[in-house]
Every structure is written in structure tokens, then in C-alpha cells.
Length: 314
Image (cartoon, rainbow, N blue to C red):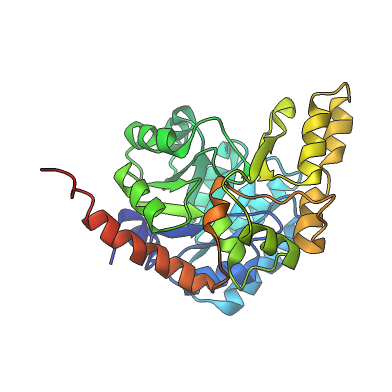
């Protein structure tokens, strides 16, 4: 059994977070992960407040374990969703794609553990000063919105910059990745791509099949021109978007190309026009299993690796 400051803080069995994947991480998946001993997280994405409230209540109907809500701060509904999280008094709020400073006080007043995603030591230090409960250090290997630093580089630097518990994210999908994260100083991990293969994950069959068949060079990053780089599978949409980025198309036209692309992948399985978000570790994901089995197995795989970490030292 691996017991860390994050399992003790949140009252969870395993130090495993499920990533907040927009239009993917709903109340059903979050509840399944939490029932399995990890921390399930509902993704608000660009969804309106009523959608998020409904997913919170769905999760509550399926589990009595702690779960969280991820709020993408670029969303036009961020203010309303932030208020819903406080009203519903979810156990945890994680944040991404921005600075959550203006919401922190209201969340903390509601008894919520605030755990921002950070991609630099500067943001880690700011979130520490503002009273975050823990931090998620997410490297650029992850799917969705990504930063510049890799997990191997980012995690130890964030750990050195704060006295808060640090959860490692980006490129983690099995016990070896979990063990590596702990060796870098993290006390838990967050996985997104691995949970795309969970039975309780409601993505399209096409999306799941692409993940199960993914290779080591399966992803690419687009969106740097607009300042919001995104990692996804190499699909016709991603390749066309990449070409458009380096053309004379306007920023407005480029941005409009991406509208609705994720939903087309998640709900419709549209291979031509969908944006299939995935991390670089997708090639490790090769079977469908329950969310609970995923949570348990990565920790069980990590334990012997950690115990044997010094076998090369004489």
C-alpha cells in the first residue's frame, strides 16, 4: 500500500487522479474512478454551469467517495462554473489554462481543496502563496493544452519550489510512470489518456479504437500560433490545422477551424473533422478495462519498481 500526503489529505485509497478531459470526463467516469479508490474529476471544459451541476449530481448519485471538478479558466462560463463548484461544495477543484486567483477565496470558504495545474515554477510559487492545497505539475507530454517543459524536467523543479504536495502529470499511464513520478518527488499522479480505455468512459468507439492502436509517434502539437498549444492524435484534422497555422489565414479563421472539433471526436467519432486529444503515452494503452482496475493496477505495478529502485547500486 502506498500512502502519501495526498491520500491522507483527500481520504482516497490510491494516489491517482483522473485527468479533467473536456467532454470526456463526466460524472459517470469520475464516480467510477473514485469508487475504485482514486480521485475522479469531472471536466467543465467549455460547458455551461447547468451541465457541470448535473454531472456533479450524477457523480453524487453513484459514489459517496470524494471527487473533483476541473475548471478550464479560458471557458466563457468559468465564472458561473466556479460558483457552481462552491455551491455544490465538491471535495476538490483543479484548474487549467489560466490563473485561478480570483476564485480561490470562495472555493476555500466552501471547504474545497484547490489543486491547480501548473506548467512552471513561477505559477507553482504563486499558487502556493495564494493558499492552494496541492499542485499538479503537468508536462508537455500530456494530451490537450500543453506547456513547454517535459514532466521529467518540470516535476522536480516544482517540488523544489513549494512545500505543497505535488501530483505529477503528463506521460504517465502505468506503474513505471507512477514509480518515476515518486522518484522525482511527487506524491501522486494524474492520468488522462489511460482512462480513455476505461469501460465507463463514454467516448466514441472510433476514439477508443484509435487510442488502442496508437504508436509511439502518434501525437502532434498544434495551436502554438494562437498561444494555446494542444496535443492530439495525428489525424486529417490535426494535419490540416497544422498546415493552416503556417499559412496566411487570419487568426480568427484559424480559431474557428477548431470550434467543435473535440466534440466531433468524442461524441461522433468523426475521423476526418474530429480532434482526438491524447498524450504521448497513448501507445502504452492497449486494452479496455474498468476504471477501478486501472487505478489499482498502476499502483500495484509501481510498488515492486519502487522497492527495486536501488538494485543497481553496489
